[in-house]
Amino acid sequence: MRTCNYLPLGRMARAVRGAWRMLLAAGGTRECPACGRRIRRFQPFPKEAADLLARHRFRLPWKSSAWETFNREEYACPFCDATDRERLYALYLRERLAPGLGDGLRLLDIGPSRPMTRFVRRRLRAAYRSADLCNPEADDRVDLEDMRIYRDGEFDVLLCSHVLEHVPDDRRAMTELFRVLRPGSWGIVMTPIPLGVEKTDEDPGVTDVAERLRRFGQEDHIRIYAGADFTERLQKVGFRVTKLGRGHFGPEAFERCGLTPQSALYVVDKPMGAGA
Ligand SMILES: [Zn+2]
Image 1 (spheres, rainbow, N blue to C red):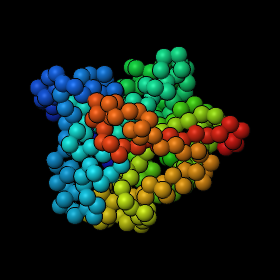
Image 2: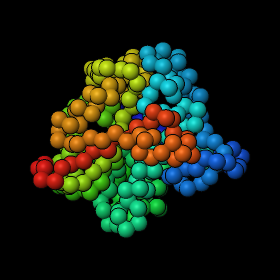
Image 3: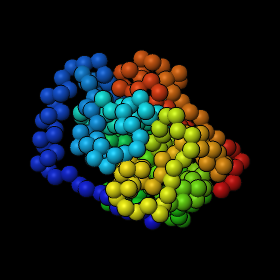
Image 4: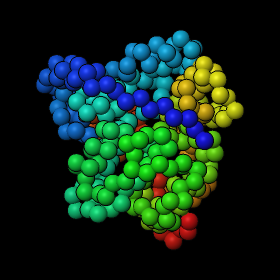
């Protein structure tokens, strides 16, 4: 069972941040695929969060070039808050669920964020449902290791972003993701992936916050996957895994959306005829 860390932002703080965003966002060549706004530049990763990692001596370099999908310099959209990874999801979902293609499909968003919830509800025609163990804004309260409230094959599209690195038994969670997806359908499953790391580092037994920050980079993370191992674990539960990067979307789209060249999207497919 993972811990809950959900801190709602105060109304005043939101108003101040909103005014600041408007100043930062005047004109520009960037475009956020989540909210559709043109802007000058995305906002950098929050300094306070970076300082926290530095204070706890996080063992991996906290810079864009050390991770697959992480743009420290252009992290968040000043209008809708979509991070670079969420802009990558929006780019793909716009392509795959274009009008006429996504109508009525049932999309399950696990570990929802406000930018993605708004994006799917406003810009896609899929039927949206969100699930989370802690977030009170989610439609369903669900433990990823046991999603029995959903039937086998209940969903047509799955979005599971930056959740599996929190879950003690991630193989069981992946099995559940596979089960609730309809055969012949697909999803996006993402987690932080450092470049050049060959072995997954994990230990659900580490509960000390300082040690989690040092070893896993966040107070409620219990692992950091190696990319090949992450793919292999997904394949072992039955998924076909396709990594899509700049070659698929094009360098111009990556530049426009503020994505680093090494950013990569993990798309999983549940083969036709696959059981739960
Ligand atoms: Zn945006």
